Amino acid sequence: MIEYAVVGSGIGGSSIAAYLDAKGYETVLFEKEPYLGGCSSTFVHRGYAYNTGATTLAGYQEGHIVKSHFDEFGFTPDVIRTDPSIIIIQNGKTTPRFSDLERFLEALEENYPHPKNREFWTLVHDLGRKFYELHGHYYSNRSVWHKILSLTSFFPLLVKFQRYLRTNAYDFIQDFYGDMSEEYLQFLEAQILIVSQAHSRDINFFTAALSLGYTFNETHYVPGGFGAIFDAMTAKMKDVRRNTEVLKIERHSDHFTLYTKKETVKAKKVILNSTVYDSGKLFAQADTKVKRYYKKYETLNNHQSSFMLYMTVKSRKKYAHHYQLIQNETYLHSLSNAVFVSFSDIKDDQLSEKGYYSITASIHTDSRWWEDKSTYKVKKEELKNQMIKSICDILDINEEEIVHQFAATPKSFKRYINRSQLGGNAITMKNFLPKLPSNDTTIEGLYHVGDTVYAAQGWPGVMLGVDNLKRLLDV
Image (tube, rainbow, N blue to C red):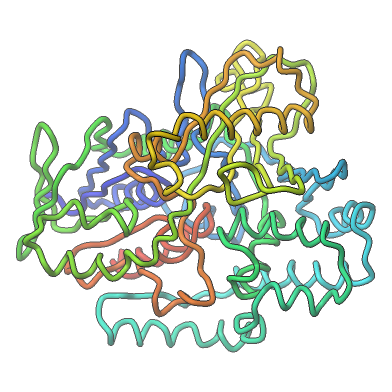
């Protein structure tokens, strides 16, 4: 009988497992694939290494949640500071998102001049800073009473930011600027979507401000690929089981039994790093209490996902680590007119072996659009080719320089990491806190981490959930 079984090695799973193990709790981390990290892992395809997602490591800095959590169990990742954190290119205009507000405003004014820019972006900058300074709030789903009690901890936040929490982001931006170009609006929309996973019409301005201010946090590059950070984070753990898929979980009065192909493991508590929409499938149909719990969250699944393009490019040009490329029209079979592109560092002797760039590019799509087998291959080829052409044209890459390329759809991710919905669930005006799944459940001993439960997606969002879970577990 172990204390904790953690199923899934994504940001949340690996982080909480490493922490619990370091604190002396007997913990086993299960991962279906040979590599750790889930959507943020690193893999090899035909001899070339790639990051699974076009991911940034944001929030690893003094006073922020990511570094604070790592420090608690003595983990210092091998990272390189990257600033600007992202370079946005739209209609030939290049705008670096520097972490320093003044440097960013100087670049912004050259491309999108407006008399209210300084006031707007200072507000965005300050809202993010003030939010991360707040502590003491937590969120529980254990019972109606626990939920009500935990929601009272948000009163200081609600009072401090109430004006921005109750206002639709699109309306707030339009009212604030008054007269703004459609091009500048698309510039803002693309950045909001990539962080919040929703358009400005669907979220409050506070969420939009945190999204727009994401790049004011320090951003880091991980040498060797993002998988390296998970390998290093869990290196001191006593029991990490790769290539071990948990097929079924049975709930008993005082423990759980987890079944894999080769063994069964008994654990007092289970922490799932799977999506809240898919987790119910792990339990027997007869366990009606568990089934009822997960059933109520199925409607929250917006089926939003990602289409990924992977390329290896041989080039002498110097590229930044991250780009967002915005065009005027929405891409085929997608939800966006913007592509996020991540380059390996040319000095990275693992991802950039032989001096080749490893490129991971992503765009939002709907997982349901990829279920029709009769059109699947055609759609995949069309979107892949459109993305290749757009990236090559905007970033001055000759197609002859592409050594290797392939694409992945939501179906690909379902096969490898057991989820087709990617990027988490947006906190919209309709599903704010009372409807959001927490890191605990109404099932004794069953917990969750990841981007489909509190607090949000990305490193800071998931780590806020990990921190919340530590409080709920009292560890």
